[in-house]
Structures are given as structure tokens and as C-alpha cells.
Image 1 (spheres, rainbow, N blue to C red):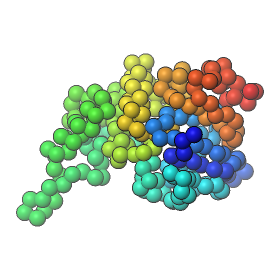
Image 2 (image 1 turned 120 degrees about the vertical axis):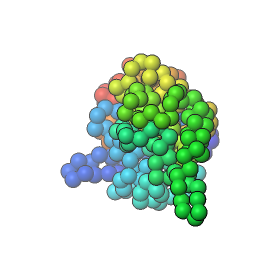
Image 3 (image 1 turned 90 degrees about the horizontal axis):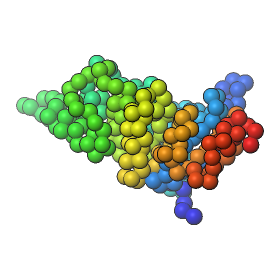
Image 4 (image 1 turned 45 degrees about the vertical axis):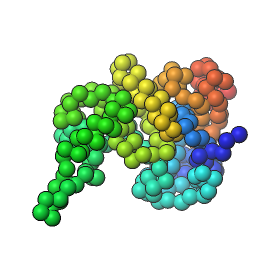
Length: 246
């Protein structure tokens, strides 16, 4: 069997009296789309925030390409090629798509020795990045607040992808989207898989799992209770695991 791109071993996390994670093991393979499932409070987001460097585990190890790694913030995770798109998207509503894609790292040109944002290059590279991911945004100059939920979600994913991640974590990317916009996000996930990006897909929309994912991992009250290939399970079995009755 192939060596995992990434492994989390015996990860524990406590918040006061609450033991959010109780020694979780997780594996992710190159080009893998893993659905991370579980009821509210199961520990999904906590586990992924640890992987993304947003919070520190109390115990446990992370291995990347078979080697143990240690990092203490999202910048350290990014160095390894790990990105996370959170539920709130963290977009700047007053800025357009191009500015959101390159926020804080805008291309610069110098005029008389003084630095200026190279807007022509930024819009050109933004269009290329969105086209590569098949993200349909007709005007790059329209403020983000005027775009649809699906377009906003795609822009947030597109921004993460411009960092060229090896692992991309998506926290409920299809929540509260219309059916047509859900289809676009699922298509984007399949595009990323085709480009060799490993994706962790946190979702409560179980029907999406069978259309976009290769494997599932299910958490129940801070423990990993099941891992399966999608073709080896069913919606009913997933629900049983999530409820702790399987």
C-alpha cells in the first residue's frame, strides 16, 4: 500500500474539562479526497485546526512524507503545503476577487525606486488562476459582497490554491449553498484532485460524499470510529457510525 502523504497519530486535545480529541489517528494520501464526518462536537474542526497550525495539540504527532514535523502556527503548516479554508471564508467584502486572491502578497513593480502594486499583472494572474480551476467570475473588479455564495466560496478556495498546497482542508464548503452552487464547489474539488492536491472535506451534506470523495473518516465524541473507502459503505452505515450505534 502507498505511504501516506500525511499522518496524525494519537492526537489529543482538551479544552478545560472537555476532552475534544481522544488519541485520534488519521491518514491522508496524495491526490486523496477524504471526507471527515461526525456530528456537531465530534472534533472535526479541532482536528483540522491542529493540522492547519491554528491550535496546538496537547499530545500526538504529525508525519509528513513519513517524517515527523513540528510547527506552531499556520505559517509553519503553509511551509509544508497545508492550507485550510474556514467556514467564515475570511474574505474582504469591499475588495474585488483579484485583490482577495492576492491580499497581503500583491505583485509589485517599482517606479523611480518606489514600490507600487502591479495591478495589470495582479488581474492577469488572478484570471489565469481562476481559469485553471474553472471558477467562473465574469468581472474581477466586482466587490466580493456582490458575488453569490458559491462564487465567494470558490474565491476563498482559489486563494488557498494560489499558495500551491499539497493538502487543502475545506470546512463545510457547501453549507448554505444553492444546489447549482454546490455542484460548482464539488466540481472544483474534483479539479483539485486531478491536479494532485489532497483534500480533506468536512461536511454534513452526506450526499456530497458519494459524489466527490474517495474515502471517509468518521469521528464520534473525539475518537476515530471508522475509516472506509466510499464504495465500501452506505449512507445508512455512515449515519450509524456518526450516532455511535455501529
